Structure formats: structure tokens, C-alpha cells
Length: 485
Ligand SMILES: [Zn+2]
Image 1: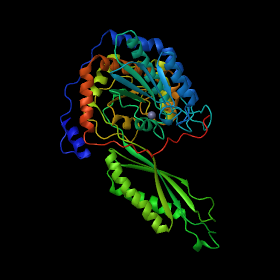
Image 2: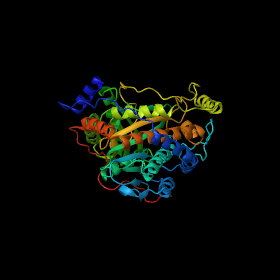
Image 3: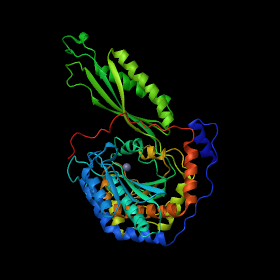
Image 4: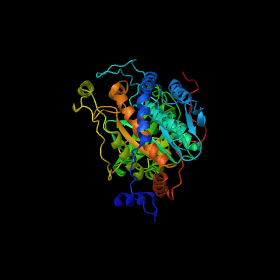
């Protein structure tokens, strides 16, 4: 723990940080926790229906029109005040119930991924070839989080808890980063604590962070000519692009091992016999801290300029989006852990384990089945996995408690068909129900115990001390598609 704190201080470049909050808040099983678990069980058919509808819609970033509507309608029917179309995104919404402090919030996602349509079966077969699919399980994410908010709402309505519960319908996690725009809009300003979870192949309170990243495109503009008749009159934009990617690839030797860089060429010209006057490369650069990503971007900008100079063309680099790393709140993670242990392991039928092993066989991974147990808290988690999320940006503005829940077999390739398959059947639904219960039980503690909130907020203040948050998104409105289906 001390080692972790020192690393954090170094990374943030701080000379002094007050000590982190100490004692883990102990859970208090009681009637309110029993009540929220019972509420989630009562809601189970409705939540399964919501998750299945969103799974079927499979709408991608900022096109989640029907997905957002069914979730927002459910919240409204339960008596929430629902504000739709927040932060300039028609598919973003906030549903609130109750009055005053504390304000405890839960995040929900519902966007799908392009091109991974998949039936709820253990062999690869799309519902519609080439169509989007829920390869990250966000259909479960949104429904579980909303179910937990409804369970808390019932206790507020009964006068057993006091304050405000809020569900944030956050679109476009897979690209764009809807939450970054919601943060910029100030929508989290009055929130005390935020909870979030994510579908996974294991169940644990997360103490591993996520990676910071910047998403940008570099355009090269040259001069076209006939590639054989008068190539000397042309200046190839593609030459500029190739020099740029060459420089980027050479930089790989001189970055920390935690850095990830990947790109696709979106435009490299049309035909070989025309010197291309335009070329575009789309790049993501990631590392464990946004400060490191910022340093990398200084070098990358030089490469774009240098490549343009070498090819005698023009270059422009445009940042489209980017996420901060998620701040881990260990005090909150311990509270989550206690509640997840209390909710207990996810139990599977033989048929579900068979489904999982058949799927693992089809995917070419070890046939280990499903892991339903709650893993112990990892106090020394090391560097984050190579993934990023806009939950990171929320975590720099309000403390975020984050956990993972099994919704797919051990070792499932993520953003891929096995996850989509399980998200449309009972394996995914069981994870969703577990997540809803764990979220709601933890929220009961946060409402009932001001000292737990204070300890979490104290650690948050220490983690963010001396660092000014500025999201990576460009000025202006979010890139909402001109036409939505
Ligand atoms: Zn995801």
C-alpha cells in the first residue's frame, strides 16, 4: 500500500500528499440491504427484458436511440425525474429520485460495437452479418445499474434512506466518450460518490486502474499529379503518412513498456496511377497515466510536422477524444468487496457451464467454464490492463467505486462474439443481477453511513490533489451523427 502511494506521488509530480484514508468501512447487513436484494429479485424479469431489448437493438456510439429510450422510460415509470438529451447528446440522460444530500450516482452504458453481431449460442454465427453486437456486455451494464437505482429509490420513497439517487445514462463509451462530455457539462458536480461496474470473465472489486489514452487523426495534404506522366509535379500525401507511421513505429523502442500505440490508415489514396493529395491515419496512444500520454503527444506532434516537411506536404493533427486513467479508490474498493462477498458467488447450472465450455472450445481457448466466485481484493494490483474507459474521466471529478462481474467464460476474448453470445442469455443475466445487488447494497452503506462517504472522499481528495483535470475532447458539441436511425 505504501509502495502504491509513493508511485502515485511520483507520477503526479507532487512533493507532498497527505496520508490516505485508513480503516476500511465495515459493511452492515441489515433490513435495507435485504430490501434492495429483494427488489432486484422482483425486478429480475423486467431487467432481463431491458437487457435483451438493448442486446437486440445493438446500437453503436451516439446512435443508441432505442436503447436509451427503453432505459429512460423504465426509470420514468418508476417515478424518477428523467432529463433526456443532456450534454448535447440525444442518447444521454439523467434519472434522479429524492431530494438533497447525499447524492449517490450509478453509471450505465448501453452502446454496442460495430461488426460483431452474434446469436446467443456457443458457436460463431451472426444475427445479421456485419451488424453491430454487444461484444462488451453494455446491454447488461445499463440494465443492472438502473435496477440498483430503482431498488434504492424504493427505500427513499419509504422514508428508510434520505438523499438523492441518480442514474446516469452514458452513451458512446466505445468511441467518442459520452461521459467526458457529461463531465464537461458539470453534470457530476453535486455528486458525492459514483458507482460503476463492468462485465468481465471474473467477479472482483477493481483495484487495477485503466489506461489513459488519446484518440487523434493526422491528415496529410499534398499535390496530385499523374504518377507516371509527371510525378515530379506531385507531392504525395501518402508519403507524408508513411514517414509519420515509420517514425511512430521507431518510437516504440523508446517508450515505457506500458505504452500502447495503434493505428489504421483511413485514406491512402484511390489508385496507384494518381499521386494522392490526401491521406489520413487514425491513431490511439495509451499509457498508465495521462501525464505520460501528454508527453508522448508532444513527440507525436513533432513527428507529424517532420513527416510533412520531409514529404513537402502539409499535416494537421486533430485530437478527437481521449480518456484519463481511472483513479482507484481503495477505501471504496474495500466497501464494495464487503458487499460483493455478502451478495455471494454467482451459481451456474450444468447447462450454463456446458454452454461456456462449448463456447471456449469454439473460440480456441482453454475449456475452464465460468468463474462465479467473488475474488479477494487485490491490494497490490500493478499496472492497468491495456484498456481505457471514459469512467476514468468521471473518476477525476468525483470518487468512483468500480467492480467487475462475470458475464462470460474464463478467458473470453473481449469485444468479440463470445461476450455478445453470453450477454443475450442466462450467463449474462446472472451477472447483471449480481451487479445490481452489489451496487444497491453498497449504495445502502453510502446512504446510511456518512463516515464511509467521508473516508472515500478523503482518499479521492488526496489522489487528485494538485492535478487540474482537463478532458481530451475538443471544444464544441459532441459529434452526434446527422441522422440517427
Ligand atoms: Zn465496455
